[in-house]
Length: 478
Length: 97
Image (cartoon, rainbow over all chains, first blue to last red):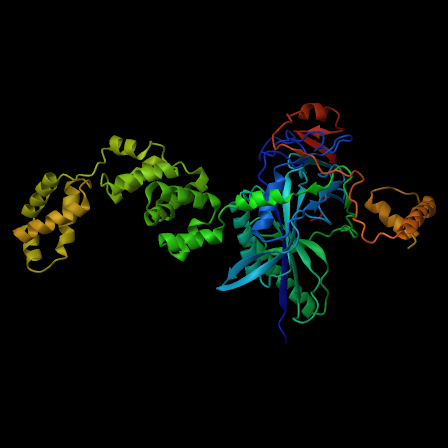
């Protein structure tokens, strides 16, 4: 029997990083008290007119250019009509026939060493809805409209993905891209980046099958699991002679299954029409050129540069570009120290470990790139050893000040005085005549033992390289 | 294309309007009258005419991305039929899960 082919298209909602809503001057700061950031327009009160936020346009253009799409020089807002309490106007303002980012865009993904290009149908501007709270009040639903009117860019892919792995690779790549473009903070927990997956199966060479939509899954791992489950479910239905129903399904990560939302019939008739309250948005060539010039370096280019110019491995380059914040931190550190490899080691070593343990993002690190550069400078000039540096780092992490302050306060200065080191070396050699004899008898690995003893005698403060050199010289003499 | 009774019922449901059974025929007639007018307009030659998305021949005005609104929740909620713990309350919506 011929195998089923999986067909996946994704719709991604990226919340744009603005101060205010798309059509009103209300703040969109996350986590505010309910309805304290919802004005009369956001509440859908009559007599209020929307005025478009200037900041969303350059962000949409930048995105369009980054994926190589045509920019809609004249885009139009439409009303998408449906009833739900968290949408008090009775329609969502969106773009339908004339989106701001038109066709022609794509994104390259890599899965198991194979590169594929995924088409992007379009991307349009729209407003978010509010939030409904269902279980808190007997017989009533609570509505918080703080989120209503938050600016979103909805990015619609072609049905070009053929496996859950490809879908996740595309979603991750998009997640990375919008952050590097500085148009979305990518925070999935706060709902700033939401992925809906359209999944169907068919036999190659036959028309696409009926699709199910998996909505609002907020982790990449769950997206993969949800698609895997959904594909297996559809195969089972079709192979037992059934039919897949077009519907929205919710993924339950605890049971690892998708469940039908049992939508009402006709629920998908949105009766779009141009919004009479908003005029067409016109983009001039100059607006596009301005964004093209200001285009930041994108992740793929960064990775190539890290490998070519700084000799980092592909894996390291990948880790260091995991987020815009990460690569910003790294590049600042390299600028300050001129040491790409060492900077990379700090970032992927002690810093990442500390961040993971504290559950912090790199832009929340108590040790800034500048502070870390200060510490690296003290290792570089021999003031402290690499081992001491780790100690200084954790003190800096705990808020005990800059590297120099910590070194001073803890008396961590490395002993580099030749005379003092020679004195300690001589003492150690005098205390261990048997080991000296063994070394001179050819057991050169005894050197490590002597280094250890000297370091112990110096309470770890002697410069290990110097200790080594002095030891070798003294052992050769005696 | 003529509108039938079942179309009226469907449109009314989408628009959340309640149309009495005996009114349906009348409403269908009115809607068909509107469609007749559109039919006349359809016969006009429009090849090469740019579709107009708005009757005003102007482009969208833009607003600076600066917070201009202050918290007026208490005033707004005073005129709401029901509000509690800062939330607007509406009759229970059955979550379709």
